[in-house]
Length: 128
Image 1 (tube, rainbow, N blue to C red):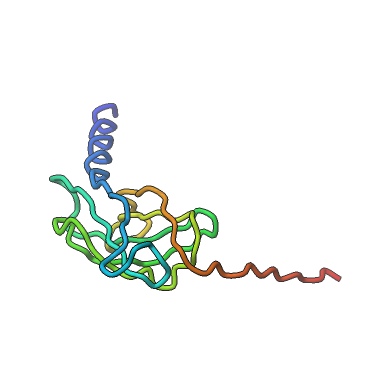
Image 2 (cartoon, rainbow, N blue to C red):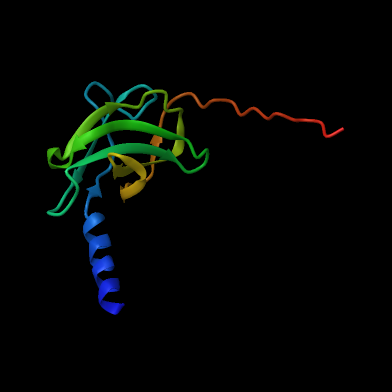
């Protein structure tokens, strides 16, 4: 039992070896903005998966946005578009399994997107 626990811990450490760097504005942009280009890079180590997908998560609204799918880990970076990502400061990147976004390999630091913040709409229903 103890030996199998150690093996699982070692495997978990290997699977989480990808380190995401800070997101930077892409070519032609001076800031991270809605519908603007952005570049993220990472460090990978032996034993990391061959492919990852990159997702943008929002801590406040719990929204998720796909940034790049099935990227070769050995490429080290990718530039994409912050397509329809609203303005806000609670975003972070996740490197996930290319076939299962619930399998998270790495989480990046929080970042801010400059852009219009959508209004919040509440729907009230009557219980009568």
